[in-house]
Length: 330
Ligand SMILES: NC(=O)c1ccc[n+]([C@@H]2O[C@H](COP(=O)([O-])OP(=O)(O)OC[C@H]3O[C@@H](n4cnc5c(N)ncnc54)[C@H](O)[C@@H]3O)[C@@H](O)[C@H]2O)c1
Image (cartoon, rainbow, N blue to C red; front, top):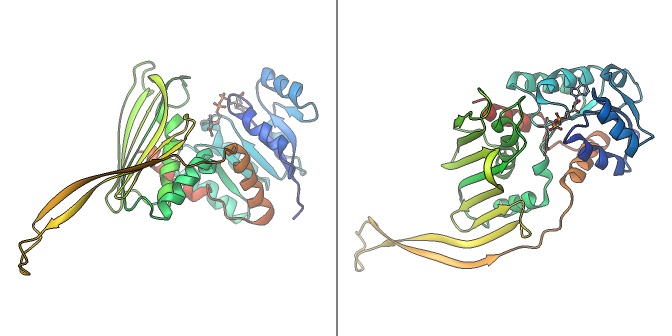
């Protein structure tokens, strides 16, 4: 396989420019095409990157035999069609989150990619975030003990969309992070409670509850109708607790806090049952580890190219993407 991958990107609206900037900066790929229906967005790209070819017709991109891989950063409703077309034309794909609207669509994308030996990756950016990766190492090393529950808040007075609700817009991040942290478990149960205040039928705020095996609970609160920007995820373990705050200077705070349970036995009677317990609160050090910041999209794109060029297994491939859509579809 040749080392440099030729890329086409479809969609340069709000999020697409971040992907494009990182693709342009990466020496292992070359961006040949950008496609967007909007003339204004194509003009924006032309000013910044005059050597990139522009089109409003995605067919031109799919029909170009030079193109090895397509980045899809268009609204969710278009992902499935674009992904299938790209795969049929033999292109690897990186599809923004969520990969598609239904589990059946994600499954079909996965089957086609597998049959053609192509990479199909979802843009679950937070899996490539160094703070999230640090947190996963803490969990995997069992420094936090048994994981008990996780809750996450992604709130602000933000951009209101009309193509998806706040759940589909924000929660793919939280679900993807939690699944990555826990090793992609299959939920035991999922339920949600949401409400539409601004546009009929489109939830502005959603509380999502997930139960995983081994009594692990998760709660995700998303809203674009909230006074403060909050991006916080808290992991409570039996030994330690962690606050991951994505907008804080110290993104990870490790609390050596917990409740220890000791059996109260009778006075030296070996037939006593430990029916009673004594509880003691443990409150030790608070540690802010130093974590090197690397733009997550840089790492994400390096991983995508490594999957294509070296056959590295994709960590946000179809199986990860499918479980996210499964939870969103509750
Ligand atoms: N990973 C992240 O952190 C993150 C953040 C924001 C958005 N996203 C995802 O990125 C995707 C795009 O979101 P956005 O907020 O940038 O949307 P957007 O509406 O701002 O931009 C989408 C762009 O796609 C173009 N487009 C639509 N249909 C097209 C077609 N058929 N051919 C060519 N161009 C077409 C539009 O003209 C627009 O410029 C979504 O899947 C969203 O969930 C990811």
